[in-house]
Length: 205
Image (cartoon, rainbow, N blue to C red; front, side, top):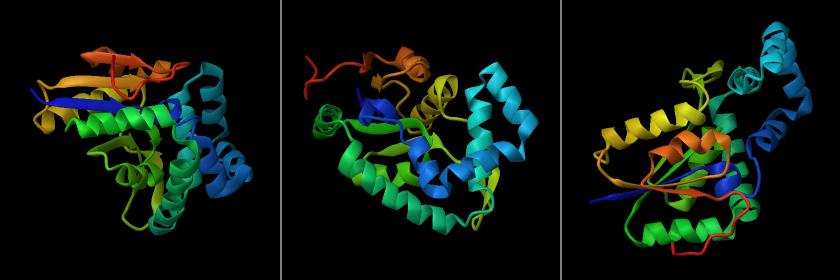
């Protein structure tokens, strides 16, 4: 039987959230405020109802809107360097390397943004990255997310589809997460590992 290890990014592989600092690096706080101001009614509704997914689409879509894909790719690659050099958790990186050393298929499944998560995935030599993306026409970005925010149920759905599409439907699944947005993915797993407030050994006990 094949084995797949699925890792969340923010707070699981890393010591902190990555979305907010990337957006600030991309467009500054004035860009965040501008994205909210462009859709004031939707922004207010998302804030009042606590709809994190709608709020994220407003902010991320608003800040990516009209930007050149090539420009964001360059920013994303630089930000991936920052994550790799400063924010990765040593214990979680060691656990990922253990899975890779065992010949397991490793997937990062995250609400983080593809602009930096894909180059980070290449650095980490993972087999696939499932994440949040913004629509684009090949040259410039639009202002909507592709398939929504990759968290909670959406995260589990994307992972399930990826497993089936790649012949891993019957695989032994390890899943690592740290927040409410990971619970559905953890519920899918043969081995679910909650990492918030913990330090993992390199090899599972």
